[in-house]
View 1 (cartoon, rainbow, N blue to C red):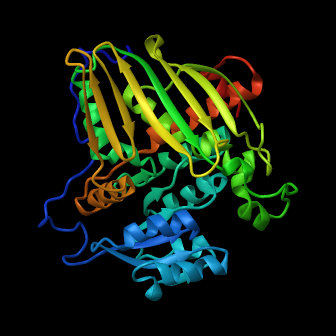
View 2 (cartoon, rainbow, N blue to C red):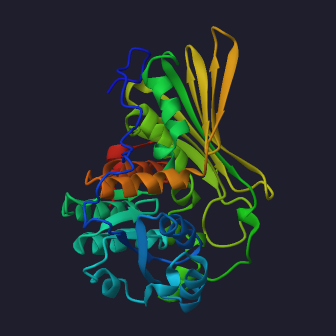
Length: 381
């Protein structure tokens, strides 16, 4: 695949986002709602679950978590949750025939297993990112996806792909107004996390692994996988490819808890020689935050962020900035529900797996202190 140029074909501005007219009929019975369940009622599960349960097209019917205190919080925080059925066993919840869709917001290392169970139960799936904490995990998820009911929507929590502002920025690139794309940069500079908590022993019991999953590489994938996958997903999306190889450096410089890194600098090479840089760290003090992407072209520069995009046009020496109209997770959830209501299945499996593997490629290059190819990564598990 050649790098994106000013002569690139204009692609759809919607990027797969399915818009439903107000009077469209449900795929289900008239006047019915999408029956929805949550697997994992931690902070992210409750946050995204609240977006789902606040949509008038949704009925929150079930919540699953092995920790009773999380179930109690969900019952008090989410609209309609007081009437939802509670479960500790996700298989018991997935066996509900009247349950249409599930949100999976469990620890990263459990994503492939829980995704596989939801596929087997023939549910619509909204899976939090990333696709797994390891190459083997991603491969397991991909194998499960091959067996998925093609009439079911499968989305992942890479919200940027549904943001109107990100889509507008992508349109500028695809229409040639940026010129030849010469460099892509993802910044994920996030304050405070490296200094949180006290040192703890490596957990051996499963419940302890679940409670401390963010601290360890085998359960989180490291911060480059669990967190920076968002920015790398945007680079892959705008490049219309995954990288062919990577080289980088990183370390655990000041992290107090677990074995994750706290800084990473990776150079990815995409088809045609296009470079993508990742600069990520959790070393700054709270609440410092600088998370964005930049796309440098021969005619200008695009900068994308969850709250805006801005476009510098070199010929006019002018910068246009457009603010986001709302939190972009709402856009992602709405697109998923639209796809169910409209009967037009959404499937994000391949791109989400590739973005997770791109993160793992960077981690492997850092750990092995050499250039690593995509093929080597896939052969590693």
